Length: 502
Ligand code: AMP
Image (cartoon, rainbow, N blue to C red; front, side):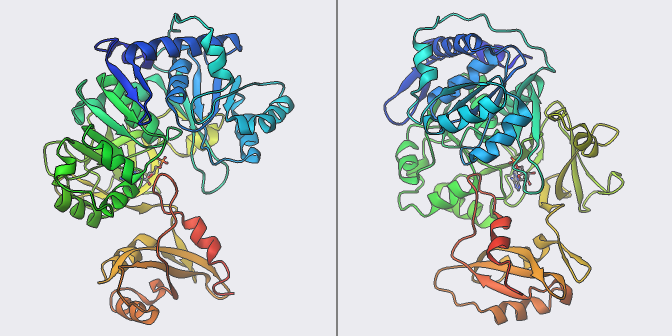
């Protein structure tokens, strides 16, 4: 299964719209083939050979997507990097991945060229937010035909570094089989066709925007409205042209604050999906009430692509991530032994299937530690399967507070706090404490106009939670800090509150 071969096969007509960027630029599928061929020729001229890594840290643009496709066509391995990474962080990635070529924003060129020189002269090309740069200048005079390099199922198509909240970031290796099989499954499961117009407002250095959104849409031969970032006003004006949008939960909470969000505004849409972080049940319910659309929540991760999805036709249940996708095996297992647990019990989520990566780049020990002998990958997520077969995620195994020697799972405390009247959401963290090692600390967002007190919240929880689980302090904030993918940044909260008990 060669990913670009499948994308090529899915093209219904060369004149068909491939993408428009919301700022007047449009590309047909014919343009996509010509331009990605030109860039592939430049990659080869710069010495990129099949299997080589092409590291890319650029702002999202149509040309950035073409560079991804060109890398696939050249048989090389696409390595996107979060645009927030600093030069010091890039040094690690370049040292670890040893790319043959680095493509960066012109503003970073000098710094990267210096790093590249230190690393034995890696080639550096530029691409800016408008899609201009040395790379595109060189492509302008390159040939528009390119013989796509043949790749097998197990050849690498991409390496994505995991966000690495603890320890060094790991490069998840993704094969052509991983990416192609998951995109085909999602296309069928979510009923994507060439009639679809996908509103694409996710970053493309991450699995969600690059693979879930772009690959799935391309395998359907549809069109994209490819926006550089999510802007609620802009998205509202484009909903009438689109059929579908894939988002992170923050997209939906922002749209809900927009006065224009109505049933009529979403009348042209057939599907809204959410993932990368938990969608609050409240968001699901409010969105349904306002638009008539039940957001379809799915669950996956960089290492595994997508694992589960709420059904297209059946009931989409708020607070669940639905059923294992066709071809994906999912079990809830005892975290220590890996033995499957009886239905309904909470345990570690483990998955196996063509979607699951073969391992971490040059980290055989870490890879071994995260796979069971029978091939199941230990996701690190904790969950359960309910009586109807819906998977629920209850937290991350590593998200644990140890206070006075007792283990406290933040998700349990957060669920109790979130259920209190007047609370929007909460995050529970451990902060250094002179007596207890860590003090359970709750960070709470209240509904506007409600008056909740620290004492009042603790008093409410006293009857529901064992004493050692009770927050020692409750901090009120307007919003929880989130990264671009909508994940709550507990590390930021811990840093802000590190002297709370000093
Ligand atoms: P990433 O590799 O950045 O995509 O992060 C993957 C992690 O995001 C998973 O292991 C989950 O912890 C979390 N995640 C993804 N989708 C969901 C979801 N629908 N609900 C809750 N957590 C999710």
